[in-house]
Image (tube, rainbow, N blue to C red; front, side, top):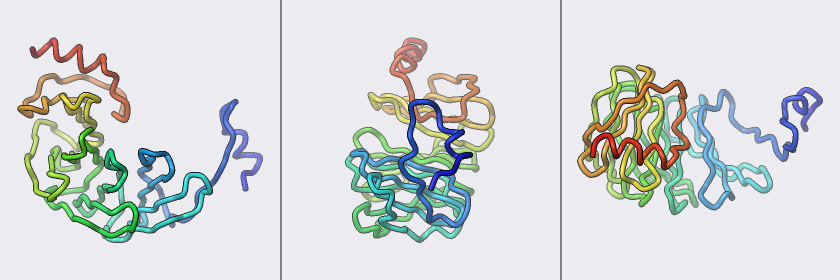
Length: 211
């Protein structure tokens, strides 16, 4: 139950609905399913957990990672969940049954961010090996290794129109890559550490820069 100290931290106009308890340690990543009915979380206890967003009840615990889970991301159709962890892998799970579908191996160090292309065919991951990897989401085949960052990649995000991919690194830059050629088109200095929302205006502006 929320106590007085918890209520003091809730912004005006918001009401605490549920406190989800189940992870045994720090939680690093959370993501809503496309239909808003399920919340996924990944943490230091090496698990991914799926929660009923309406009731707050734990639906499934997904076990397979051998180190902490940093990032979780839903496929656009909500049928598959991707997770990236400190064991250098990306794992794809059946969101209905919790069955592990694929284990994607290619990073040489921890995976900090995973994201799906809007059509659900491609998965991008960024890690502490300074690279962005592109995967075939159906087969798990590694399609491409993108290099350019000089420090760990902590966030990756496709533009809404699927024309570009953005990657954010602790080297202090956001790099934009064209999805048809995977060539770098811009390097931005960016203070934000999260690329969860990428305004369409950003895509237009840097399309003009590179033609």
